[in-house]
Amino acid sequence: MLRLKLPEKPGMAAADRAGGGAAAGGPSKKKPRAKDWSGTLIRIWRYMSGHTGLLALIFLMVLLTSGLGLLGPFLVGYAIDHYIKTQEGGNFLLLLVLLGVVYLLYSAALFLQNYWMIGVAQKAVYAMRSDLFGKLHTLPVQFYTKRQHGELMSRITNDIDNVSQTLNSSFIQLSSSILTFVGMLTLMLWLSPLLTLITLTIVPLMFLGMRWITRRTGRFFKEQQRNLGDINGFIEETFSGQKIVKSFSQEQKVIQEFAEKSERLKASGYWAQTYSGFIPKLMNVLNNMSFAIIAGAGGVLAIQGLISIGVIVTFSEYARQFTRPLNDLANQFNTFLSAIAGAERVFEVLEEREEGQDERDAIRLERVRGEIEFVDVSFAYEKEGRTLRDVSFRAEPGQAIALVGPTGAGKTTITQLLSRFYDYDSGQIYLDGVELSTIDRKNLRSHMGFVLQDSFLFQGTIRDNIRYGRLDAADEEVEQAARLANAHSFIMKLPQGYETELSQDGSGISQGQKQLLSIARAVLADPAILILDEATSSIDTITEMKIQEALYRLMEGRTSIVIAHRLNTIQQADCILVLEDGCIIEQGSHDSLLRQQGFYHGLVQSQFRRQSG
Image 1 (tube, rainbow, N blue to C red):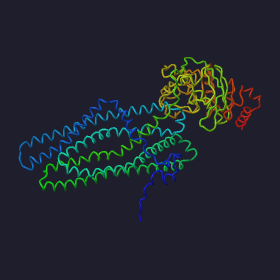
Image 2 (cartoon, rainbow, N blue to C red):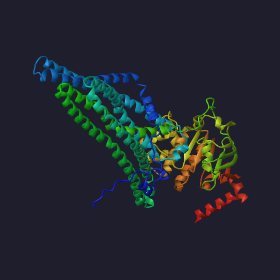
Image 3 (cartoon, rainbow, N blue to C red):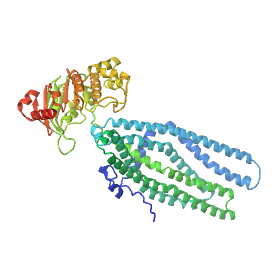
């Protein structure tokens, strides 16, 4: 016997077998529901309310189309009773012309209201997308470390697109439906209170049916949007790490994981569309029932001479249009629910706590000498377990401070605190004698230059990537910075030189060349403080020599914080801080630390043996 296997509902066994649950990026055991429909709709309306002039014109057009839509059936019924039934010519031709004008005006008003509404919707969505993108730049670093980039991209694109589609139609649909509903009810009562009462018996069934369906559908649309964001994040992550996937022959594992995520998306989409698809079908059934009852009852009343045929025709058309607003809303229901779910995900980001706001009187440093002091600084990324414990050190202006130690010792954390990507839990950090937390963040970072191991290049020309260090720099300054960074020679060997287009991942140039461009960018920025985070690892010896030479030039006269796994690159540092488990266990120059025969000495010996081997 052939059996059709339906997708299991999200949050149930299928999701569990697929490795679901909130932690795995799948549906949680608690079924998600729309958190605040009215609040979400109010926030969407705020984006539209800034265009009151256009909205007023749209509302006038809605009034006009609603009125003309009611006038048409009335004229048809009038024609039946006064011209067709009596077979009198009279002004029948004039009535036909009037009917044609009514429908022409209706079409023109409908076009204008849709045209203007699209403009309002696009402006509102533009503002929403701009607010979201701007908000993302105010959020702390940890917001990004805990989320997939593709999932955030899904909120900017898919979720806002869902809102856009709904705004283009639902605002007009809602206004028109309310006006039409009220107008139809008034005219139907005027034509025949008895038939109106018969028609109204269908309405409670419609609302009960819609309520039953909507209570089950909303959570599936929210689940669908979440699963869509999850799968987008996975795709982005997989594409970014494609070399790693291939290097470890993990293609089948990735394909299997994608299939599991796709299964969850399919299941949530199936049930969302299935439940919401019941509404138009329910409306059609009740509509047909209503029409049949009205036709039967109207026929009986007409035989008894209580109403005319024209009234029955007009009433039947009004009765059909009476339920049309509900039908229209039902047909828009899928888009509406999807938009509410998408808008909630957008507003979730907009409600995220921003990076600690600077006080209005935050200090802005015009010039920075580069004197840095940490005093008993402690910090933890999470509540449990401290990453730094009572760290204290001092860097005089122009000094180079090297940070060494095993992975997880707290080296990068020190640079993160210094640049205020995170705020320390206790202790004090001073820059030129000014407490770091009182300095404006943007102003602080404008005095810093960063050269990281994973050099990030933007899509664009080499010239534009270097100019990112100082956007108002002239071409000559860009090229001079490249010369100081030992990058000019390899750039000029490229077919288009400084105008060579780079992709986001910088394919086409080596890792070492990417780092040279990063150094050139830092040279152009001319910072007072330089942070070098493992900037000379994973490159060949010749390129490393070029980079080291460029870094010495860059570090000259600047306070530098250097992290490097290759200890031979920091031998000239003024002070080396040795960290373990978040504590400074040794500090001093390279030679003095070797004489201590301590932890640093062991690191140097261990690395020397590996290089010799």
